[in-house]
Amino acid sequence: MNPSTKIVQRKEQNMKVIDIVNWENTTLLAGKDACEKTISGAYSSDLLSDVMGNADENMLWITIQTHKNVAAIASLKELSCVVIANNNIASAELIEAAESEGIPIISTSMSAFEFGGRLYQVLHS
Amino acid sequence: MELKYKIQGGNFNRAGYASSEVKKVLKQLNVDPKIIKRIVVALYEGEVNIVAHAFNGLATVTIDAEKIKIVLKDSGPGIPDVEKAMELGFTTASPAVREMGFGAGMGLPNMKKNSDFMEILSTVNVGTEVVLMNYFSK
Ligand SMILES: Nc1ncnc2c1ncn2[C@@H]1O[C@H](COP(=O)(O)OP(=O)(O)OP(=O)(O)O)[C@@H](O)[C@H]1O
Ligand SMILES: [Mg+2]
Image (spheres, rainbow over the protein chains, first blue to last red):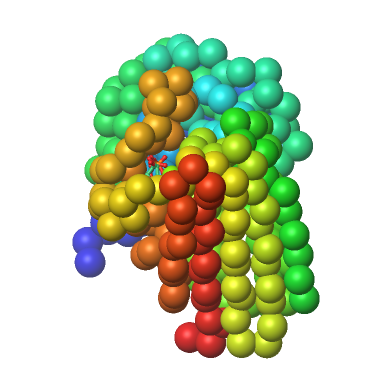
């Protein structure tokens, strides 16, 4: 294993929700006490049953859905956080539910594609 | 142990309540986390189906040493062709429900995949009963 691979692996293990919050073009909307959670990967989908069936624990979820069920799914699946793409406005019910469940909700001006691409680079470069 | 949860048709705000409560109970009982994950997916999809497609329903959850049995019984339109409803991608969800990201036609297939036993009994214009079972041993 060459040294650069090791660095990438360490980086991967250490990627936390707070790192995403610190990016430009992202804003934390809820769950500030849960930002030390580790991100193991990501899943991008606006179909809730798709996320329910295919996302895994500790993944970051990229979506444009903004209603309360997003928090329920993130909590049931134990996802690390939710990123709402394209400046979509999270509903007050979602923010409230995420706050009480301890789910970080992050909004971004980036599209799902742009955000996912950037995250992929950080996690897999 | 028997737990009962009422499920209100049309009320998406409460969808997931039963799943979340059952998850807490199973964690307390030290059930294998991998098995809990499967049960949670199956129950959540069952709850949402009553909310999205039926008028009202009841989830009855029975837990013993070996297994969990979940019976989701609703009064509603019923399912005319259960085999077709089980197909990946089949949906009759309304445009409003689809807008929310439900209605991918993946719920019943998710339930099948995440349970050890699944049975659907349905009568058109009366309602639907879905029975799910998961065993705790690996
Ligand atoms: N409890 C129910 N009462 C009446 N019809 C149902 C019920 N559950 C499922 N169905 C029917 O079966 C179809 C397929 O269900 P399934 O859960 O697979 O997909 P969906 O609910 O349409 O979408 P998704 O679950 O992906 O959000 C539904 O669209 C509906 O026609
Ligand atoms: Mg469904």
